[in-house]
Length: 277
Image (cartoon, rainbow, N blue to C red; front, side, top):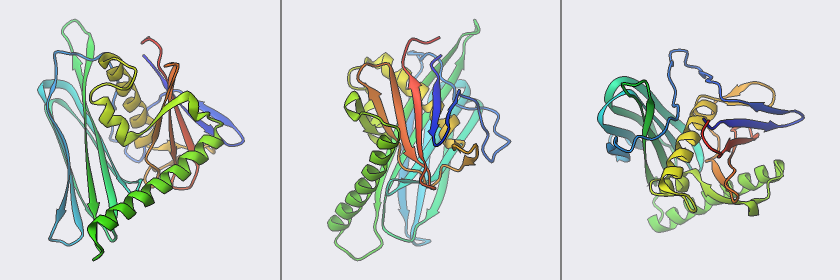
């Protein structure tokens, strides 16, 4: 099994192997774990939506839904919602012996924002001979929520530029902080990475892409969604962190994930891309 490590550089370099940290939720007993993909099992539906409600005003309904073509030993969905490039909320849930996961949340906004919702849909499948497999899918949604009377096209352009400027500034700061040579990698924001990975990532087969995506989301779930461990050992809520940048090494040995916490601490996740153990 591939492993991802959380690398935090301050005065001390800390490397953590994957361990499940149940951030502020002791009831959680399961998490996303990657197993080889079963090509015979598929998701009939995998959907994320963002809808503006008239009443109450300034309210967004965020939904995600997925249905597997059969019941699974364990179903899990993890969803992230970003506003202008920073995480504002999460949805994650798991159920046993079911094919369906539905999640919904209503969010009230006070200003114009670019919303990006990203969802990873996962199933853990136990076969009769004690073999364990996975099935997975991804979905996303984007919405320009505009409260002002400005021309919509102008406001969309402004939100795009504002978000891109903030993300580029923070990603570049993290690249310098960790002394990463960008020319050695293909770089994709998580939103773009997930769209590409629905088919195949550049330079990889569909099977290789599935393995990379499954291991990546296992690590994101355990070391990002459930809480980010900082250099001082404390766990920080991921809310307010920047949209992760995924860096795929040109030599295909590893990938990196860069983000910044709400307290402005650069974070680096590292995932090896060798053969499964």
